[in-house]
Length: 301
Image (cartoon, rainbow, N blue to C red; front, side, top):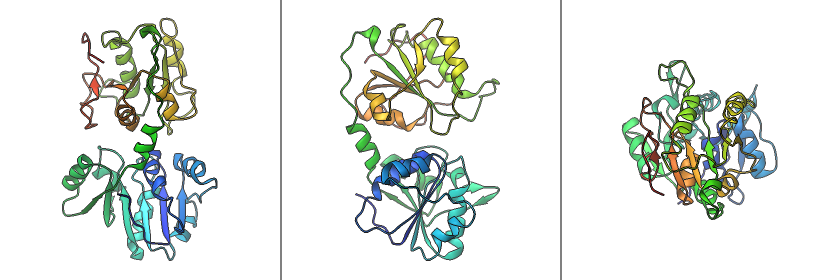
């Protein structure tokens, strides 16, 4: 089931996650859109609709909300754009729905600078997310809609490549963890190191090529030094595929921490692992097919 919208519809996104979920829903004939996109969402909107959206700077957000019948917003962490949009919608009496695209950190998505602003409805895309939202936001309206993005991405992934084990590529999908678990090193680098230590015990050939795909929010060059350090004993490089589906399609294994890309890969029939180290909290993705890498353990396909 896809949502029905009130128009004119103001759509406000910054981070890639919710934007990816939202954009396929907007392909409805005659829908009056007022898009406000910044950060990674701006490029995603342009790739879907072939034109730029306003950025939300200055008075652009106010202009998009003026006379709007509804606000649909993402719930990213890297900006306060979506939070400000919900604040302004509430002040103007505009019906507001917010899309939670993952399974973690629900309450803090709606908190900025000590202010909590809920939408009129919380929108999710699976039963587990609906349960988490109902617990996180007591008494709130939670609605569940089809994840057209997940369906399309998984369908676009090619069948697993039939190659010898030593040529079976690993796709490592990166994401900023925003914690160091008390060890003084960013969590994403700890997880990478844990993967390199445990990959052979998990059944990955030491000769398998490893391709890193950075998160859209990460700066260019962030992993260059780490890659250079690995090249003495492993085939490690940045992924160069144009799309995530193509990157998964070229790979036998897909590894990461808690990225939604792991869910896409699992849906597409890949072997999927979370590389969170033993001292980190358990992976919060609810899909049972995601296996946790652990030292000395061999896992089946």
